[in-house]
Image (cartoon, rainbow, N blue to C red; front, side, top):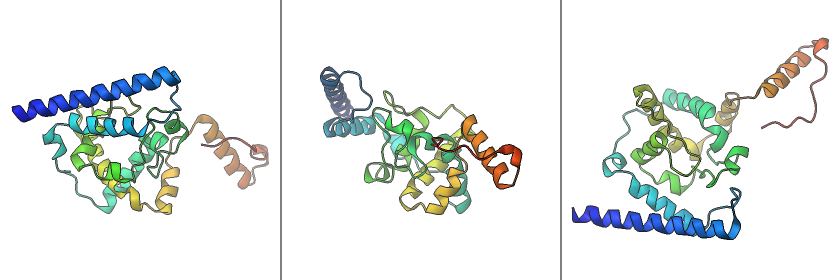
Length: 205
């Protein structure tokens, strides 16, 4: 009981520090999601997040066996659901990710890779309040398994190959304009004169 009170006290203190630092930054800079969090903000935010995850969840083992098929399935899921913010390579270098505050982490790095499987699942399942990370868990057993397979894929990110990324790019969601452009290009390459030359200079994400 005493240990729980100490942990709670530390968590509240860290949370108060983050709130105070964020408020001070807001006073200095105004509302600006383009501003990068300071090292102090990032440090305290990571520790508050870790303390907010129950110990039993942190220790939870991954019930899904890591196999080639599981990684392939997870990469397809990641490309369709996660890459718009996190990038296919997990670096977070995307148009949407760059506009979030705080920005998505580079999941290839130690700050993410040092988390336990249970912690990664908890973040995917429950999201992170006051950030752009939504909660993907809806009490659905199939979704839970999807999240556990994503944990394996996140572990794989530091060694992901160019071929895997290229395959994921083909599965990234596309806008109606992008689909139309691809169709025009395909028809042009197949010699369909009615398609005309593919439009030049369009911005592609």
